[in-house]
Image 1 (cartoon, rainbow, N blue to C red):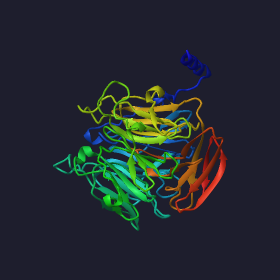
Image 2 (image 1 turned 135 degrees about the horizontal axis):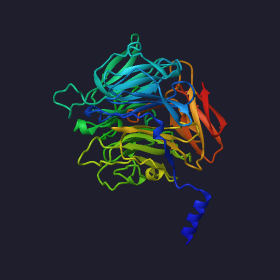
Image 3 (image 1 turned 120 degrees about the vertical axis):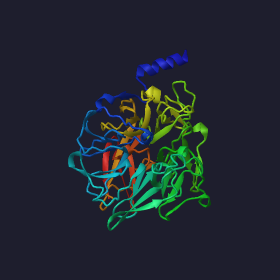
Image 4 (image 1 turned 180 degrees about the vertical axis):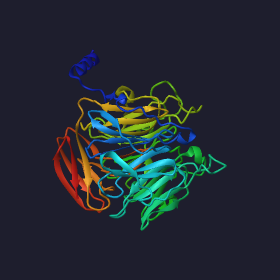
Length: 488
């Protein structure tokens, strides 16, 4: 009787048991990431403002189909934008390479990558040659970028299987590439060994140093490979002497977020089977999260298929604005594989007050079972609630509007500074004790350039502090429920 009375009271008050999303997929042009075995992986999306109206726009990979550029017209209306046809695209990452205030795109492809220079009103021109990026006929599946000075970014590109290897594809992983600025544009340096990279992220590691983390697909390196960490300052891979434990998994995507407010970011790595969350330790090492934390997402949570899942894009974001970062994982089989789940719903793992996570995708209305790949949690309508975009292999894009009632307060923070690193990549932003680092990379073939989103719970005032890339600090108090731009 007590339980029944409590349920009735909750229903009468309109209280929400969890997040709720509305399906707005019909608002997007029909677009499918398609193709053969060279597009089993990839299928990313870049989300960024390409016309200066402060609304996030969309560039979606098409695989063998043309890539798609879509403008956000407001009110969850979207319209396609004409652009030069690009096929073979696996994913893209937005960044302002030339610091002109217009986002450029590094476009990964099966074949020669393209660097597109942003123009006003969502225009783009191919500037690969103008930027001095040498063409390479490789299979690009991962990307990240960082600044070590006040000039142009350094970039890293991850390559999958070496398509020219006659003994492949197994044990035929390609090397990766570092793109280093020089007087002629960019100098390409080989980063080896490579173990079939599917995600890269340049960010502060648990030691507080700038590191390049590389997630690798065990399915193709078969043996001898592992997840990698390249110390950017020292120019070397970390090993056992650095207490960097070798972890071998079917690495697909990377997500990073400080989950406990200690100033060190945890790292999520998606895979076939277990999705691995590593907790940053005070001594600068990482420890695998306990299974009871609820993030391993080993098998489909609906549908009755007991075989292991396959995780791809992962992203932390506070979906209900309660001040705790939640976790979205895109799921989907490569193609039909006897040992893996075929109908594999995406995950939405909501963080509880004790730091554990609970599955909510089915109740939220986003547990579709297409072969999902890339994705983006982003506020498309400016209401302070994170919406969801998902790219599927051989199925149309999915778009969901977050309509959760009773969410907490929020703040969205953008940064600007003088010089080549205009958007202050590498800065750390703290809001009411929550810290996020501004990075380019991670996910699975999917990147975003936009404000950092913070859920504030009941707090109506946000205490904001920034550690800028040069180490200088600034801070201020601002009212909640708005987007702000801080300038150095």
